Amino acid sequence: MGAPFNSSPATCTAQSATPAASPYFNERPPMTTFTSSGPSIDEQTISTLEAHLAYALPEDYRSFLRDRNGGIPTPGDVPEPSQGVVGILWFFSLDDNRAERSLAAAVGSWEGRYPETMAPIALCDGSNLLLLTLDGPDRGHVYYWEHEGEADEGEPARTDNLTLVADSFTSLLAALHDWDPRQDPRYHDIAGGTGTGDPGFIPTFD
Image (tube, rainbow, N blue to C red):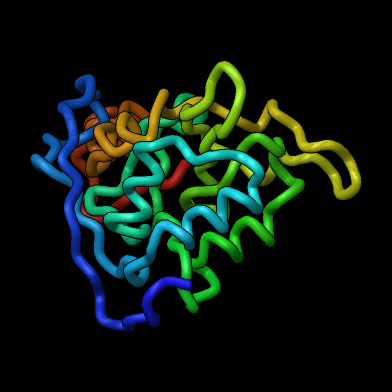
């Protein structure tokens, strides 16, 4: 097991390359900050997870767990084809006694509801997930999993509720931005085509 849980927030940073420009996002800060990360963990803790999953983790995500062990990202919005943008609530952590933040608890809760060669790495708005592919030709790719499109209980996991958001965990971190709703064309439609409505209004989209 890793070090005992520490309730004080941990802050850590991840350097990232500049992602492709998007009109929906504000200018990106030079790094992503993670707060409320999990406790320090050792190699054995990660190896235990890999043994349960029956797959080795991609090295960039493995390093993230070892060095940062999850947390709340700032900025925390990522482009996603079906939604336009999704908000990441937090990345799961190992050896975390906060059930909602625990990677082990997430695997236990959602296992069987997504393809077996994937693992949950983050919780998004709306109780949706980011999944990391652990095997096959797209190993390392990160997908957005939309729970309302999942299979009925007892049926095989579906794949038509998955959309690709990044070709690696490193690329995912590089894509994190703060979403600017006033730069989103759908906001302009709601605001009567001008985008100059209530400055405190943040629209949501189905």
